[in-house]
Image (cartoon, rainbow, N blue to C red; front, side, top):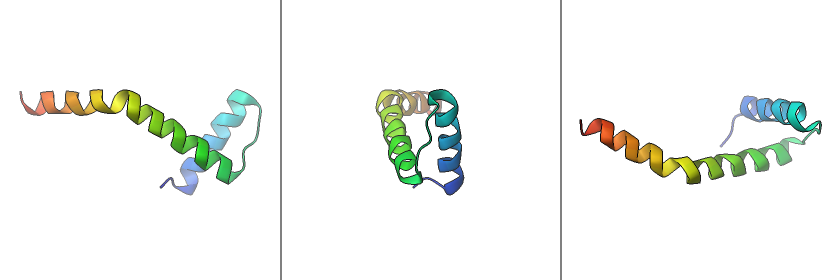
Length: 56
């Protein structure tokens, strides 16, 4: 769950980059999709890297 502050920050960044205001609901949907994509792309690398550090 994203905090209200995180949603507001996402809205601010989105407006700055795309010149479009989002509702809280739309911002929440887009932010969670972005986080999901980030987790898919980088999640396995991050977990693998963390295990390598622990094993040293």
